[in-house]
Amino acid sequence: MSEMIPFSPNSSVNFSQYDNTVVLAQSVRDPEVLKQIEDGWNNFIESGQVWALLIGLFLGYLFRTFIS
Image 1: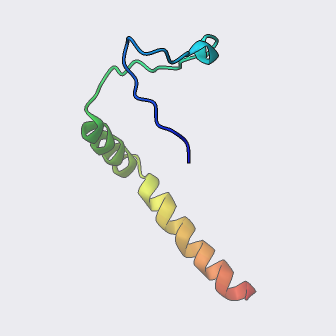
Image 2 (image 1 turned 180 degrees about the vertical axis):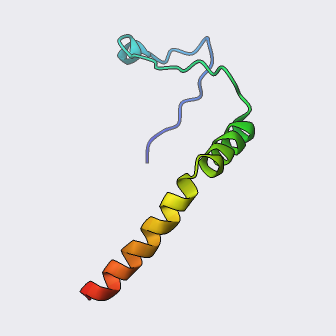
C-alpha cells in the first residue's frame, strides 16, 4: 500500500512535476444558475420550440410503429 505523505508548506515534498501545468478557469458573469435555467425554459416555451419537440416525438413514435 502507498504511504500517505501529509502536506504542509514546510514539508520536503517536491512538486516540480507540476511546473508546466496549465490551469483553465472560467469567469462567471451571472452566478444565478436557477435564474438562467428558468429564463431558458421560458424562452423554450415562448418561442414555440416545445411544439416542435412534441410534434417530433409524435412523428418519431408513428415512424417507429410503422417500421417495426
